[in-house]
Image (cartoon, rainbow, N blue to C red; front, side, top):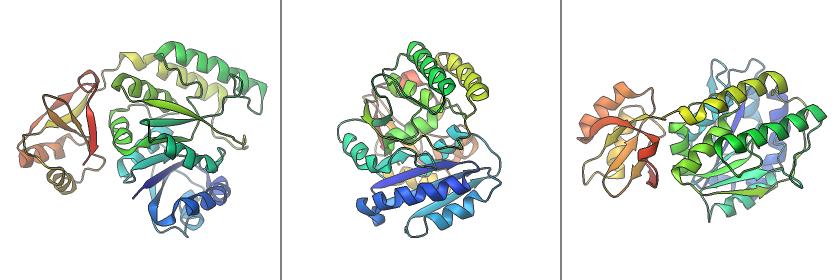
Amino acid sequence: MKYTVIIPAHNEADRLVTGAARLAPVLRSMGSDQVEIIVIDDGSHDGTGPRAVQAYAEFPHVLVVRQENNRGKGAAIRLGFALATGDMVFTCDADMSIDPRHLPEMAAALGDVDIAVGSRDTDGHIVYDSWLRTWSGRLFNAFVRWRIGTTVRDTQCGCKAFRLPVARALGLLGLLDGFAYDVEMLMLAQRLGFSVTSVPVTWDDVAGSSVHVVRDGFAMLADITQLPSHSYEVPSITLPAGTTQSDITDCGVAAHIVGLVVAANSSSERVLLPRDAVVAAIAMSTKLRGKLGVVRLSELVGARWSVA
């Protein structure tokens, strides 16, 4: 599979249908057989899941996954990363407020970098449908750039593109379930040495966003304030020499673990595992004759990444 499009959706039944109408022509031009669409129904109670099935019925590779409880956009995106199989992975909001015609441009950008971030920035600013959202957005971005040191001006744009191993790595390492997950991913990318570029995009400020400026804004600021203090430890298996990708894949399937990624450097090769898969990882490490342990973010800087 060449492309994966991940769409997180919480109570987005109506906007998802409108978004699908905007996205479908672009996916046809990219090659319907080369695209998989993953919709994460994040605890909706308005029939989002069934509507997603109907909206994308023309495409041969569609997966709609329902989470019984609303866990948050970050959790939905990380689940999508774990399930993705396309060489290039896109995240898009259900309403497709970012013009989907920019997806091929973002795919082209991945020829030179690890991550392409859509940017709604115009003359140094993003203008929303209300002055409160516009000015709070400017203050938020200034705080983010000061706190984590990113040069990305539009961290919250819902349209981003990743190489698959990079998406898997960020999905396994990330901790935040809420809307601040974008900032966390960019911070992790910066610390790991992933290359990032911004791609200018056009957008429509579609009504009905689930983001509450005050409530979600304070929650995001609280999350971002804590980011630099996390060590980002995850379970890992240090692999013996001669371990093949198929060995890892087969063991992962047997252990019912998805979303594995391998980090290699000059001294070792490790497969990273989800934090909630420690019990299954014991059996997996035994079968692979590897050493089960914990790896920190600082030990992964400069690693070569591949999927398993």
